[in-house]
Length: 445
Image (cartoon, rainbow, N blue to C red):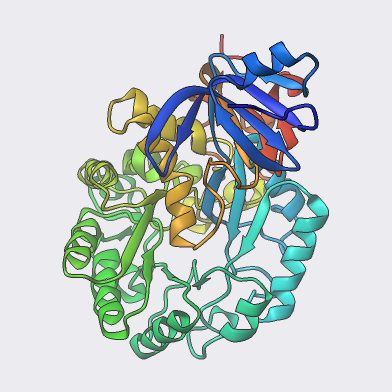
């Protein structure tokens, strides 16, 4: 093929190009022109050398070239909680982790329940000029679960889904109307599935560990009964229900059965639920306090199996930054959640190293699959799409150090873990927004 390369912006040469939609991988060059992928072929670099001077080139030999990651569950905290995270710091952490598309939850202050807040978020994201940001609007006004938010206005302003994440929608009639209304705009309702009456007062998974620690537990049934209710409502309303941060074996089985019966339900799992159990709470470790909580080994294995068989569509971080003072307190009083944008990639690649997923499928779980759920045009690697890409060194080993993370808050449950795999270069619209080579990260000894 003839390549007109002299006016190209960038050439990525010799990498293993992963197409998550076709589920293929091959050695090829990627040519970028005007911020778009102009060509993908194994002969581009050779043709350019034959023709003489060409564009700037990144030697990707030994690297994976994949679409920029899509994290569909992130708390960027701005507006209102800038002491925890800002859109600028959150997207800086995102691109450092290879994430080029971020969907941010509505539990800000003010809540993203109206078009003006949606527009503010997008304006701040444009000013940061790092990752793409896709706001998620609230299901209900002020997350109060009493009155639907302004879906039409928020959708026009740019939301891609609705969710009261952090606050379950306890009113079944309101949830039904949310599914019906969201269906009109072809957006999903993202469900924080938790029965608050069953979970009330609980601070970790109900089981032997909670008993040993003397902490009040949250039974897996608190998630199971809400998933059962909302699956039934999705069938009634005909809307798209998406289960956020699924954590229990029972919920997995209900999603599996609902999909088999034709209900439009999708699901995501967070890396911490794939890698940690309630044992991580031992010592009253507040960085292991989550919502939903870390559960049993049986639940963890069910999640991994469901991810492998496709019942769980995507991996999403539930990136939840909190100030040190909100974690350095008694366990009962500590805030829920951990940061995750910078550890999403290696924890997902570990599923490949462990033989649970092949490489294209693992990449799909953090690119094309979340993009499909949110109806985004990102998460693809093909000619004619914007050059949102990540170059990954799959063998690079590094130690997680909270102080070296770029996110503003440092509450990670993976402190001191040896990770394998790192984003080397991240591009958005063909523009380098993160270069680990320049950052000079230190590999694990």
